[in-house]
Length: 191
Image (cartoon, rainbow, N blue to C red; front, side, top):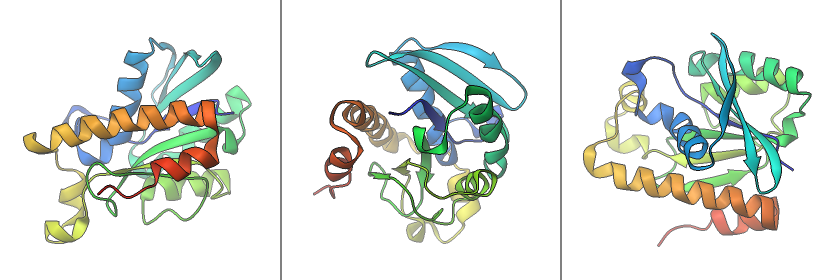
């Protein structure tokens, strides 16, 4: 069973509500919805704890920049004595349309530098993740950095909110129906 949820993002006010920080947005919403409390706040990470589906669960935001997400995550896993298969990473994905989610048990980074850092530090790609679609890069003139560090447009926020709600439902399904069944449902293409 999952023991730690990890949201990927960049620290600093200028990165708030940017596409690259959708993992943080999920963690903030989840912590608020389920009344999780801060148990550790360092320069490298924030860690919360709460009860979810009758299980003690932690949530975490690495406070390093996305490209260095693996360093604080490795420290927290050691501190909590949690193995990498018991975490779920919430990460932005430029290869999915805005609002789509994909649940994966393992696989490549898909070019995401935060996942690359995590895989490098934990020495495995067998780490569950929920990929959050932020819009396909091809329609943004190939200026990838400006795109992922850009804020969502006002008319996109409804899709962001729906995606976060769908992600909470998927998480609930993981706890109640198992990972495989949840993958079947969560990964269906939207019509």
